[in-house]
Length: 128
Image (cartoon, rainbow, N blue to C red; front, side, top):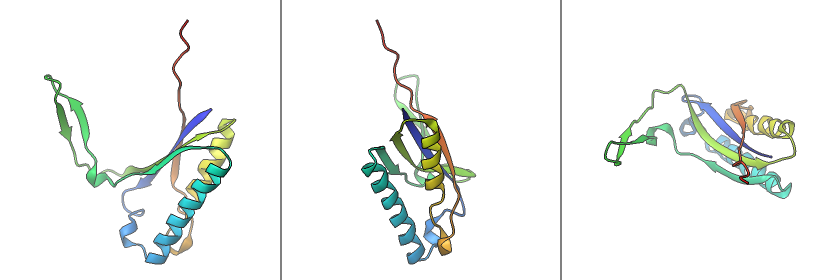
């Protein structure tokens, strides 16, 4: 079963711009190591970090089909910082992996304990 694990972070405290180089490097090293462990276990499908909310836009099709954009929304309380798609045997395994990701180090090496939303990736129904 495939699951998407989405890392949600508060708009303020996770802003890595204010972190020391040592803290930032430790955080990135953790994320890279986490991806390597998932890959070696055969569980990693995809993983990406995302640009900050200051670069986000909401897009809708206008009446003529042309894109209409709205945003920037920097006042949001939380934003999606990144995600992993994993292929695991059970939801419990996805929850275990999400807890590991949640414990990524922040300033001073303390675990961030960020919220990781876990949702099953749905597949299309088999048509007769």
